[in-house]
Amino acid sequence: MSGEGKPASLKAAYDKLVAATEDKVNLSTRERRARTVARLAAIQALYQMEMSGAGAEDVIAEFTEHRFDRDMEGETLAEADEVFFGELVKGVVAEQASIDGAVKGRLATGWRLERIDATLRAILRAGAWELVRRPDVPVEVAIDEYVEIAKSFFEGPEPGFVNAALDGIARDARG
Image 1: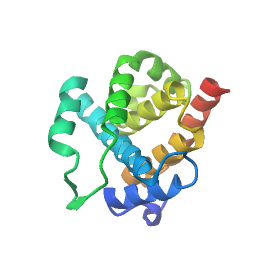
Image 2: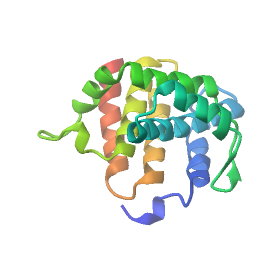
Image 3: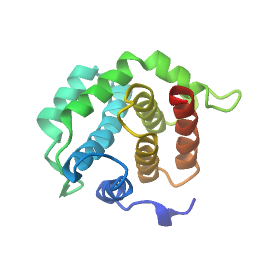
């Protein structure tokens, strides 16, 4: 994949995510934007937890107290759905073994989840948890949002892998 499809910043990724979900969710524009920010923050939180060994409650508190409603790359994003963020982070952590099992089922033969980039693991885990545990979120919205998040971090085949893996997980979980 060339760099032309990659957003220039997290703000650009956020704007692209909001546009992608415009007509697919029965939420107000403000609620959609808050969920988008929550998903992006959850990826950052899961990554931070994996790199630092911090617990879910500590990282959730850090985001709530010091990161939400603050500038991101010099620009203020919309407010985050902090409840959704907390449920997502806690859910992935609490159900990591089963979520990892769902993700592993989508890896090529011989690949281990540990071989995948930590950011990509966070994206896959959050997307898988949401598809399995949040039936109120339409499949296409969850997949689109996590693919767009992947595009904001990766220029190669990773967004396509996220799309295929989450699509398979969705079929397994929701039929």
